[in-house]
Length: 436
Image 1 (cartoon, rainbow, N blue to C red):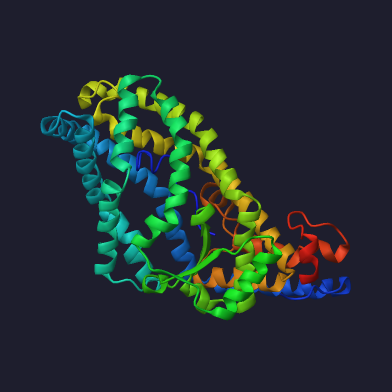
Image 2 (image 1 turned 30 degrees about the vertical axis):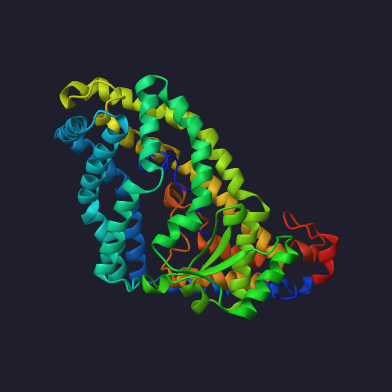
């Protein structure tokens, strides 16, 4: 599953703010041998070339936020942010117009400053290691589309104007109002993502394989899930990696399979992946994460406010910015929020890994197909050039999913039904027992 929760405050301030029959107990030694084979195959697939790719990705994941902080400081120390504020004030007297002008200038400048790193991370690196099918023109088009969307998306500028009105009305207590607004905005983003945001960049169609769709619906029925929308997306036009995810809730909820996954994974592997995604639904992971983000917003924005105050006290006169309510202080809030996010990342990753592990357990209990689960994780490691056994510090700082080596190992070892032990998460309803 990909990151199905939008980053904290990403919408509100848009940069301020992812069936085999179980064997008998006597077959346990064979399962252990299989685990060794799968893990050895995953290790063998992690060639020096793949390690080079993985190490570069780790560097970029660490460098990206730092690059964003430096870009924000550059706007402040060069006086560009103050200049953008002056232009915005000169073009309009209403706060909405000023926010629109400033945010357009700010976003465009940040886009240009970030373009070299984005080009290397999203295009050059992926082509260097044979993971991308996207043309340079296609990548550039998506990048510009993202910029335009970030500025003119429905509700973005009004939300920014509303947020800045609260900042101006309460320069020291603004963070409380922004934190309160996190819940409704996050809920709106989750609802709109699959039906408004995602289709802007890819083509989504109902799963065309009627037989597979029927098997997925049957699996969902066993999980006690009403008929859900299952879609495939044309990611093969851009990448050779494989993925699947669940997004939205209520009427907008859908399970999405990349077409690369449909081509690369076997039928039983796909069903296991679907069982994992169903686990997110049954275990209410989206709701739990929304609640966590909303509650954490109060601590996060309080700390963001304190960091921003420190920056302004230390450098405000030099920047020509004396208050957080000044539009020119937007980059200060951005880099402060980035710093808070970096501090919170190990905790957020721990929660995300726990959620993903619970869904792995649910899929195993639903399907009893340990081998298919292990093979699916192995294929993910191969096709995505993933490190199955990353260093502990890398896992803690950067991994929002358990390492694939751990997932392969667990998939082959977790068999409580063979010991007569109860399931942890999947509890079939009486009407579904016959289907087991």
